[in-house]
Image 1 (tube, one colour):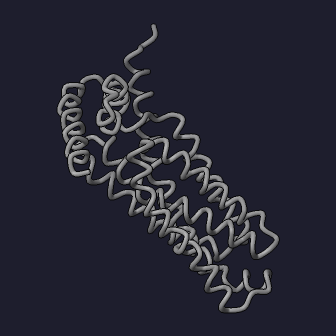
Image 2 (cartoon, helix red, strand yellow):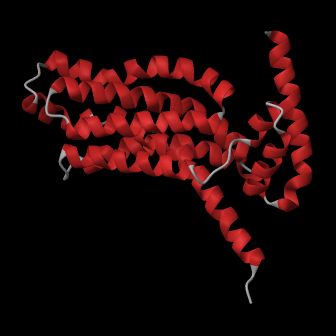
Image 3 (tube, rainbow, N blue to C red):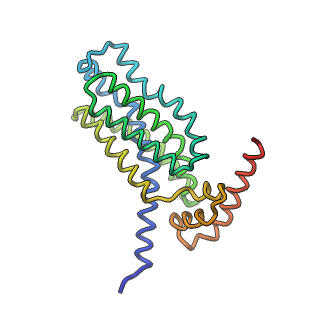
Length: 238
């Protein structure tokens, strides 16, 4: 006897967990990257023969690259969708951390910092939107708060790991986290409210069921109307 109901429940759980991981992994690597030179600044200075001023610029390269990342992320998420935007974000993040991990020259190291900083700044903007739109109403506040916890957690983890691990190994950890985030995006659907706001109601309903189950489908009608009205208001303002 094969219980399809139990299988569906497990698949629903996998999709929900993947959705949360997609939303928190990039926040984790963002906090991790901002604090990366805390435990390794002297190592970088010695290995790459950098002055103290150069180390300061390397440390700030993540946040400097993050400013334009934040500016473009919101518009990109509205045009391309939350999920598609996160694909780009995680590709940038994993590429940047890979450059950092394999760098043998200071300029490659800085380039890696700039690339993952730009990508993770976009993640910081897009993931609260995405997680807020896919979360059940009763858990929304806790789940959206988890992205902030992940960011601060990443900052704390890099200082802890820096006590006993070499910097390249620590950098490679973020390559793994970013790639896992990218793979999890293959499991999750697009944000139902974004799909509804784009007039793709059937896709939106299927995505809603994957996140919330068929029993909650009545709430989907309210969500569709809300998303479409919001889209109309934005278009009218334009």
